[in-house]
Length: 340
Length: 134
Image (tube, rainbow over all chains, first blue to last red; front, side, top):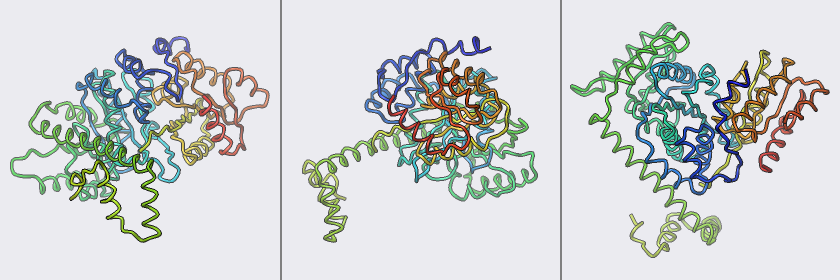
């Protein structure tokens, strides 16, 4: 048994070390050649933001654009991972190549993470059409959505035509992640009123499909009615309401209908164009924000100016507003660039 | 935000025993040591474990085995990693392992064997030293 079932990895001979002994070029070429190890390595190094990651993504970008990205969010315990597993299996049956990005939180204390989404996906571990990658939030301020986007692009370049991004639906950062998707599924369950809670919290605007999972449990119809009522209230005249579907990941019910709904999404609609523009704008700004901030911060830190100002604030009671204004004024003397 | 390399560890339970407690303790302990721990639950086949290790690009695979089949299961995982070009991934074994089997596991390429009663800090210290040395 062992002789045969690992054969498909036989062409993979990329050694892994923490230091970069393989060029970015060879990893990107490996991804193009559909080498699983190369994709996994490239994801790690881009996620770690190793020097050169942006050049690598520049090379990856032209290879992308054919994948559809679906986000899955909802409160903890709603069954997102199980549902992701069922959807992936269904999509593979329909001939798709699926990439899954499963996001779980990092501990703000230790920086460690327990990534357990895979626990619900055992039955698809060995399907060669499916690549699963767990990601920790790593406390990246707004950086998680960019990192998830990068990982999705690498999967796209590899040839995955559908990418499922699953997040815990709590926290702005994770909402940002699903916003990078083409379609967002919001998973609710009966008995917790959490669908309505989620709607109140403003998740409303980002979901394209509402799913009542665990619909084999009592109360599913009530949740469905609540959600439909909410959607009706907030819809504008003539606006098509997003679909509300009942599923049971456990009993494999409603999965086929959900897949139909996902795939029926026509590409290139005007809503799509608008969404892409919003996403592009956000991505450009967030990348720039990151770079500008890092550049300025490292300059301040290296010159010792930051330490000096910190001391002034603590010891001389200097106000932080003046500190920032003065430091910005020093940057190339272009004070007016930053004055507001 | 500076580049951040996290040590990634897969904690896997091959074989048919249902004793998950030890794996849980180790997984939580390693998380608290700052590692990213991927946990995949009970009754994994060696093939599932190898696929997960490669896709997740982990630095370490920790096998928790209490069913007595540690020699054959570990050998299958190590063979699989080798065939997948991932022989550089450190393999550790934990659980109920008789003394006399430990040298045999190490001959197969297992980095270390942690039997019952090992403090989690011993595991995390070993991993940190081994991964930073590679």
